[in-house]
Image (tube, rainbow, N blue to C red; front, side, top):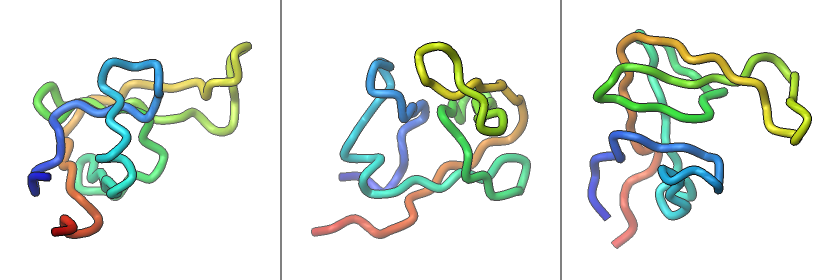
Length: 82
């Protein structure tokens, strides 16, 4: 596995950008220089993150999200296992 995280990643299993091995390894997100822990989806090249809005959920039980634009830096929390 490479040391660069994917450009676009989602933690929703129904999304085409879902990647379980990468999520198991652990992804950290810095948005505008601040560490974010409630990111549901991000795209580094387009410069946006989708974050959960409090604990509110929709009728399907998924968290309500808000899309924020800015500088997105994704990184792996752990080194790659050899």
